[in-house]
Image 1 (spheres, rainbow, N blue to C red):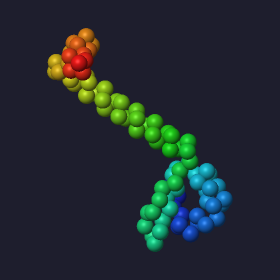
Image 2: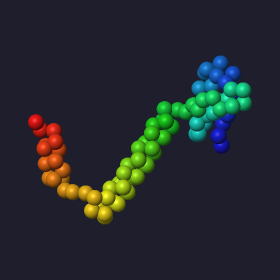
Image 3: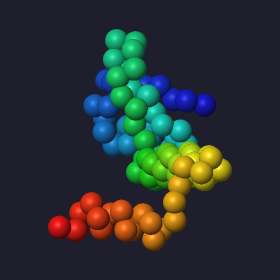
Image 4: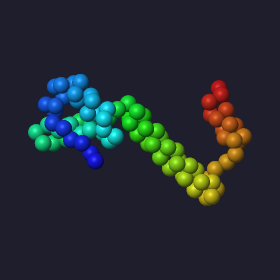
Amino acid sequence: MALCVPVRDMKDTAKFLSVVEGSKDPVTVTRNGRDALIVMTPEAYDGLKSELAHERLMRRLDRAELEFDSGECFDGGTFLDALLDRYDA
């Protein structure tokens, strides 16, 4: 379950850190009843970045398969030749 704490609870940083470390989910910090910050452990943040990178990779692979199936691709040698023609002065 998501945990919300008011910003004033951050004054006791040691206690607040314990709350964040003890929560398996990110902690929402509120100010005047509205979300102000989301705080998470470095491990949770790294996991989130990894999930996002995986999702981007999977979307790119799906797009590559569609490009291949529709013939919008060419082999590596042709690609390399085009790069050399374009950038080799």
